[in-house]
Image 1: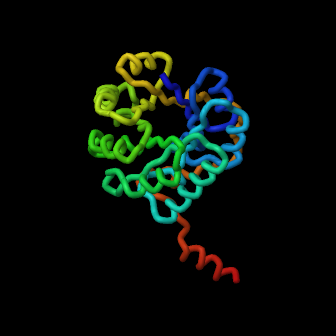
Image 2: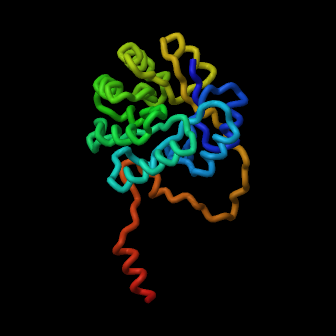
Length: 240
């Protein structure tokens, strides 16, 4: 059974490989579901690990409906990953109604070329999972990461089993709340891949008396923060 670890740093990736992980999904900012990591991190992980490395291609947090400008960034990130020898990418896109954006996903896959392509947990927002599965398999997606459309994959196991039974040409990879106490249940259910972060908090720094740097208005899944040109113009005009 493939054990893929979602690693958010070089140290996390090294720990995962040492512990027996079969593959890394490299990302940044796990707290918002992950975004594309820096090229420096990607290169360092490729240099220091021997197991396959897949990279998350997600230009921002929030929802999975992307603009033309965001697609441009995603395509550029995929091209850079391909150029430096990344083994696979993890990405995908949805329409505003939650259905698959097949046209955009196909563009991402075409740019990925021979690299392994995993459609990420945007799958858990689609209104018709079985139709989405058929569409993604038809596109040539190799892996679909899903919790079975539940908060935790253990709760979504019935749907995961249905998806696994219907998947003809792609792998269903269970992710969301995977741990040693429930991992065997997925194998017994017929799944062949698991995804987990296995993180614990560390490197503690005292915060008493320090200004908070988190901006809660930016942690919002239904909207995206974008620089307002008029606000910038008003400030620039006021000081020039």
